[in-house]
Image (cartoon, rainbow, N blue to C red; front, side):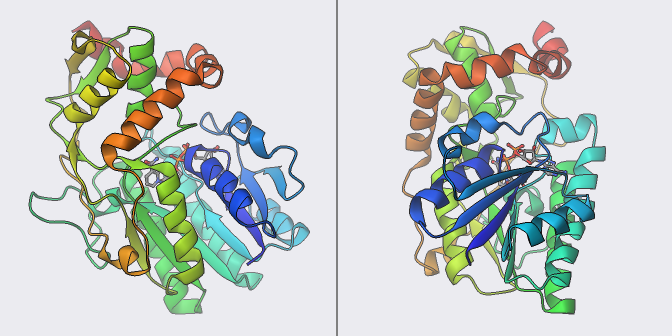
Length: 339
Ligand SMILES: NC(=O)c1ccc[n+]([C@@H]2O[C@H](COP(=O)([O-])OP(=O)(O)OC[C@H]3O[C@@H](n4cnc5c(N)ncnc54)[C@H](O)[C@@H]3O)[C@@H](O)[C@H]2O)c1
């Protein structure tokens, strides 16, 4: 493993992963391949911009010609596919791009990896592929996939394709299924940066429903460490859950966030819930722990660290919130907040 193609590497987790890998492995080259949708942002990669081991290619993973040209140009041996439309609310408003990128795009990458004989294809997946999980149970990797939103269904479809390429063509694949990530460079439509930046500006925090949904909040660099471990020590053809194994109600997250930013609870506004909102996700992480991984941050530590980053990095998020984001926010929350 030396020349790694990181698709979706200008997004939140992908960019954190690129910076982490450049720092950790002096002899690896990181080639970011990204369409730069609204969620892709080269500001996330500013710290790598002068590094000769980092290259950026603007391209769509659904475009087989550019994908193959890039693999050949940079002598790629490994693909890590982070590219996806990633926001559940947007998948409810308009699923088209979700299906296209996760299903067709994953297929294009798998075909390229197969035809060009790459050393490894790694798929970044999510806990949402397991669907809503009842209290008292945590998903294991062999559980059936029961996605409930168009986003989750598009990700589950990609996992099934990856598995099919392993079984049918013996392609060397691995999959990781991460829980909710938080940290620097997350587009402010997602709950943590949305609430942190709203709180900083003294704006209401629109909490879906009763806010008693249970989630894990995982620090993005912990997730990157686990992906790195699976790349180097994971068993081919296997999926690995990555999470804190510590669940938290959304309301608890909101309270920790407000306390960290020294903002009043009166900013909390309960609004109409997301349709089909999964009440609970929970991952059994025994398999990744057996490889030697443990998260370094508790959920509370991850929330506090993330809140402080948004407080200290207005340069990054303020221009996003002042752009097209406003239109999306109005569509998603305008009526909900007006009720
Ligand atoms: N954010 C989370 O909490 C979380 C948790 C588990 C898994 N994941 C998965 O991790 C991956 C990254 O998530 P994220 O939160 O960083 O998302 P993000 O939306 O911040 O980034 C996605 C990136 O993919 C790029 N992209 C989208 N469509 C593309 C296409 N057709 N071709 C090339 N590039 C394209 C975008 O420009 C963007 O840079 C996704 O696959 C997501 O499903 C995310």
